Image 1 (cartoon, rainbow, N blue to C red):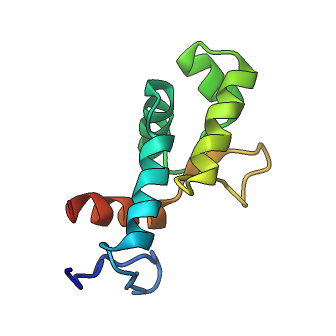
Image 2: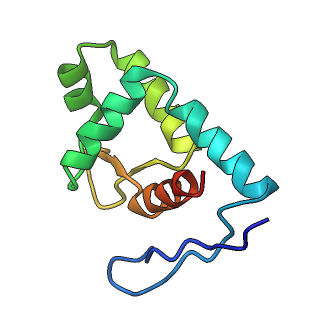
Length: 114
């Protein structure tokens, strides 16, 4: 079994590295959970929309962009939040959602280990 680790920095302001293994039972469970979260085309589209706008996107903006019901968008966001790919922007008064770049980097490392 490889002991290769994710050497991507996980902090924007500071150089913090995620040193968790990218292989092994825990990494496999993590990758499977994220894979399941990305298993719907609407969630992939949401992730792409959020990635393009680093300031965050409101649920209403996502509803308009996707042409889906608010409840459907909210459910997709819940799944993405549980997989730690998306988070509510703590500095937004409108409840904007944004990509969790730290976990997106982790996902890239996990996929890169395949």
